[in-house]
Length: 155
View 1 (tube, rainbow, N blue to C red):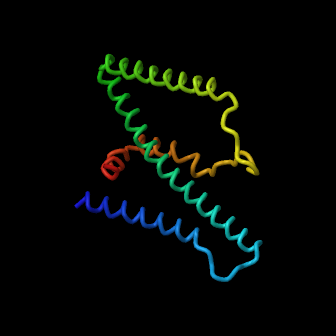
View 2: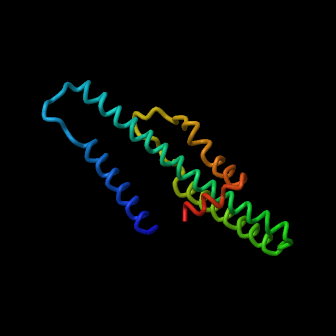
View 3: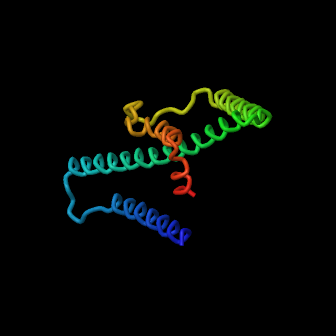
């Protein structure tokens, strides 16, 4: 029952994304003036950017919940006296951080100019407040004891 529901939700999401892509690519029969088509393209771009921010916010909340569950488990391990496990997790986390750091340094050596922005871009845009607060919100949900509810819902 649950797998069927998850499959139905995934199919619905795929159909909605495909419909939005087709809708954004359709051209009307009447040829409007160029200014009207530019306004419509800007509206579509703003809509897709907003949808992307919402999707990123949802993903950040899920990551925050999972991160909060991991932190909660680590604290429980510390209070039960499993210091060997806590030490192993800390060492493995430090090694992972070091590998990512080396990978970043190697990327800067291989590509010294970096990734250049697209032509005509306005530079860095500030991300919305909802998107910036979504990761800490997931961690706060977990610290309030809502991790069982969210983990049951996610899995």
